[in-house]
Image (tube, rainbow, N blue to C red; front, side, top):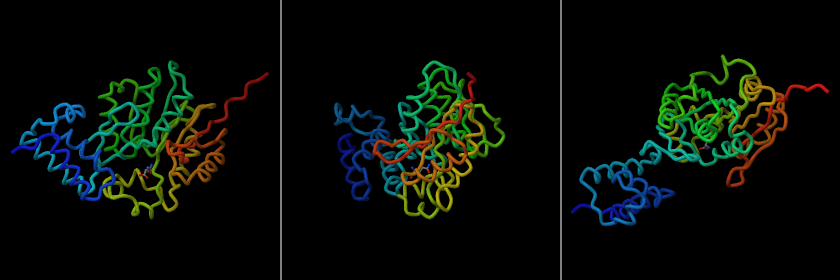
Length: 289
Ligand code: GLN
């Protein structure tokens, strides 16, 4: 007797609940949809549709992986961010809704049709850069990452979203090798978790996501110590930056950017009203008269 869609969903939910997962209902739905090649609507409108033996096998495999705490995003190989669907794997940080705060800031402050330039440092899957380019059709962007594996993911995403003509991806150590004064905007979601804290995070994060994208050194601030002066160096006069921070890093990161000479430094909250994005600008050129 083969399982129907609705039975599969119910069983999946029960298994994931029994495994003690935080979001068993949504996880079960996403895994059943993917395993059974079904849409969300199919589960409601065609609940008695039977799964094929292959689909049942695939679902069993997905559920077993999820019970081992592999993130749904890595099981499915994709994650929605902003308005995009992005390919992801274990070489990139899975994009988080918190990071959409960076995109919102950019869309508020950067004009729709002007040909400005954006640099994404530690571009990972391309989530921030590609969301911005998708919304601003005259903008062009450079994504830098130290990980060649991450760059492969970002390049794939750019190509499948039709954004390859306006984006370039380069391997690099933050801004090393980039010229001074070149970008209107610099964005980053650097590693900012203190090394000791990583072991306290959920298994989905500490066991499956790349350390390189999480580990911010002893106090979590190592990346910003380098990034603050480097970002100010590569921005054009009057250019702006927006970097994601941990909820308790506002004071320290704002200070680093002020020390580096940034003006108008302030912090924006995420949807949960936690401090999430430090932003500011490089002093514009003096205008005479
Ligand atoms: N927000 C991520 C987490 O705590 C960390 C991301 C980062 O270090 N940039 O899971």
